[in-house]
Length: 83
Image (cartoon, rainbow, N blue to C red; front, side, top):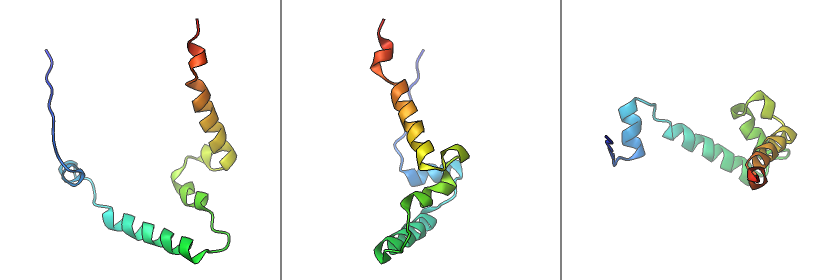
């Protein structure tokens, strides 16, 4: 027996339903701050530094990030499926 339920709702309605916080104002403030820094051309401004707080410790350097991407890309290689 299969039961399929399809719910047509907006992201805002789902967020409210699950009781998740509304972070839209925070997101807009963050994006406006980033835009201001980029427009001002702050010396030493590094976009990668914005992501550091959101990355796990092992991916906090660009080399580690590249290695992780290469490892993931090579693990999905179609050559591994050859018999």
